[in-house]
Amino acid sequence: MATTTARDGITTVNECLMAAFNAGNAAAVAACYTTTGLLMPPRTEAIVGREGIEAYWQGAMDMGIATLQVETIEVVDYGASAVEVGRYALASADAQAIDRGKYIIVWQQEDGEWRLARDIWNSSVAPPGA
Image (spheres, rainbow, N blue to C red):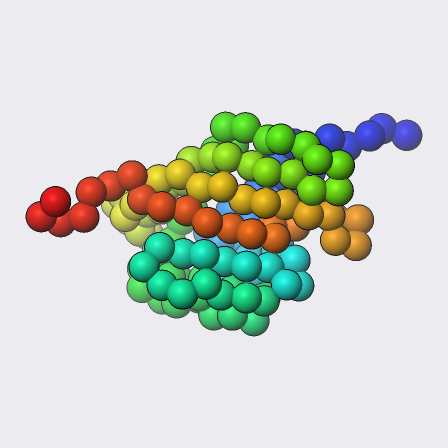
């Protein structure tokens, strides 16, 4: 029986997450989070739980964010949890860049699956006028 590493499991979930986001399926994106997942977007309060996470990502999609790309830089495996450091890029439906930046995600195994437990990111793009 092959053992799946944290990095392999996280890569699989990230691929599903990007496919769900790029298909405009906020419910499937939220399903990638633990039931008590915590989303910490820039310039807003933290969001707890899948229902709120789904609403947040649906709002982002409704604002014109059509594609998400993530790139894992590092995974530190702690057994039933792991920490991922990576980069992201967001674009519109016509492939115009909207944002890019970096993130840290704390992953946990829930029901035998890797899921995002804590998700925080920030932009690498300076705000207008900065």
